[in-house]
Amino acid sequence: MTGMTRRPGFFGRGYNFLILFFLYAPIFVLIAFSFNSSRSRSVWTGFTFDWYKSLVQDESIMNAFYTTIIIAILSAVIATIAGTFAAVGFFSMRKKWRTPLLHINNIPMMNADIVTGVSLAMLFVALGSLLRVNFFGFATILIAHITFNIPYVILSIMPKLRQIDSNLVDAACDLGCTWMKAFWKVIVPEIMPGIINGLIIAFTLSVDDFVISYFTAGGNVMTLPMKIFAMTRRRISPEINALSTILFLTVLAMLIIINVREARQEERLKQSQLMLNR
Image (cartoon, rainbow, N blue to C red; front, side, top):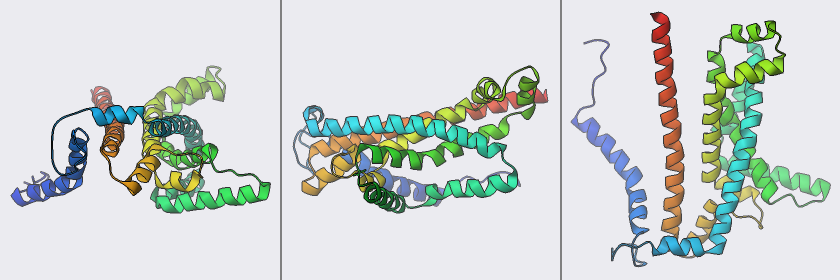
């Protein structure tokens, strides 16, 4: 029948299964061997939490973990604030100006991470030589993370701005609100789901980033993905498996939260539309 979607056949389901298997099987093997009682990467000898205990007791790993969390929180909050105001500014522009600026905003998301990392590193080197200051360190990583997070925040908020009834803002202004008060009382509550989604996405991307951090960190600061890379250059130990498992589960939890929130928002939007149609 026309208009009905066909379910994938046996070969289609098998093909999808193989793709998912080759994508996630190595991760599940890594998670399983993070609980292996021996250092073997091929023989299972028993279940243990010893590698997670030694991971927590390793001062260098915990310092990298704290640095990663602090950078992720700060960059996500700053990028969300800047991205919110930028999204509102873009939405208030005329279409002939808004469209090209949104295309420019999408360039960092389509760029390879190595391009962004090298570009920011060259910028910091140029500023450092001009001002005779060594910029590389915590501040440069934070600026780099804010830079690549802002476009994702804008992309999360723009659809919510398009859903706002412009008459609400006009009515608030007619009732005595200043533009800024109307922004906080009317616009922000309406776009809050997009703001929260942008915050979670920015935090997730910051925790997961390696390439850009590698080029902008210098020699004094190390994030968790950089620490994992440095450990794998010497020898792959079960501690790396435990650390990678924690990082994977953290990112997975954040992505699940984002998808659940989006699903609930779509469901609420459908219910509100059904009530309006009645």
